[in-house]
Length: 547
Image 1 (cartoon, helix red, strand yellow):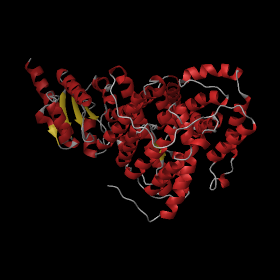
Image 2 (tube, one colour):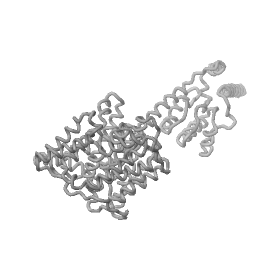
Image 3 (cartoon, rainbow, N blue to C red):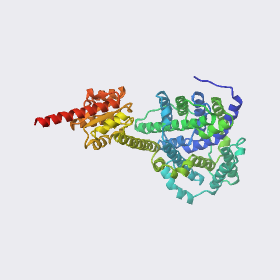
Image 4 (cartoon, one colour):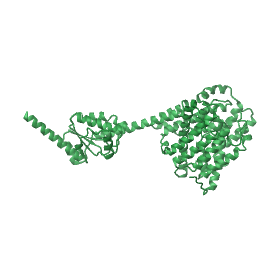
């Protein structure tokens, strides 16, 4: 349901206007970097910003082209050179996928990507932006491929354009040195754009944007091409996942600043609608933009009206911008983007990573390398899988330690203590100690056999702290109970809850558990075990006397 709140109108107007001023040079720069042209970047900011604000779940989010989205889009644009309809079909499909993510409730899970993975691919994207813009800063026209652009840097250095270097250096220095107290009146990126353009008139010779089409964007219906289907689908998936993560991370930043709580799945619906419509109108995709959102909030924006105002203002500018924007030098936009790339790199973690867990640093570096030299989906997928395996290993080690403690059980109840002492080590209690993961149960059988190999005649399995079992754990329980049965040991168990019992029964993993040896408390099981050992001993003595 669309809802506009006018209770913070003054702050929303200031926030929207300020965000639009910041978005203008960034949208132009991202449009050029994407390969689709500056007008595609501007319409990406307008369309995604408008619809994500109107339908999204984070009132203060200002959406538009971002570094991560542009990197993926530029790669797709380069791969499908000359097939614009297919490129924007991928954008439409990405928007549809984001809506599907929301319907399936994936919003809350996308945020579970481990921090080293997020840090690695964000830093990798920052590195890609820098690599791709160095050539333009030197006055060249680098390719959209990261590796090719990297290998061409020495050649571009030898063929440098001093006018472009002067323009780019000016934009870069102004972007870094612009006083924060002036940002209220003129944001740093806009000041950098103006300064770089002015220098280009003083020192002519730097390549400029040239003619920029004005008016409404061209409409593109989605198309189907069997030969390019997998490339389009892969790009759409990357854009959808990356845009979702980027937007939800920005939403978390907005929550921290406004002390509110965003709606993850609703935010994905807004982003999906925005990107879907952007693809139909030849605009590059976008996501929640952290810098523009922060500026919006600091300027007073509190509701989705601020994001809508930002888009409407940009539209008004675009309709009459062409002649003025055509004189903007490429190097000025490159200087702005290099600062964006540097800001995206997670310097805070890079500076402190060596003091944290070594594995997290390795994972971050691996994801960063894969992002720059392979592709984003491989980087994120590899990072998530490795992080999950590392977590499972840590949990398994903790559970095995608990299991070993349980096998070396020390009684706390006086009667239980005395009964175990009287059994002289012939009764062993095996306390599982908590939920069992598949990582821990792999070593369960070996630990069990080692503990019960010598002197044990009766085994008590205590399931009191095991609320549920997965298939791996159930099979491990089946193995240890059948081992005990086949080795002639008496088996008793206690505390088996309904969920765990249901799983064992459903998998027929309880066939070696003696049904008559189940007890509600461990003390009762210990009594039964001691009595059973005594009874077996008496029967054995009687047999020996008869013989």
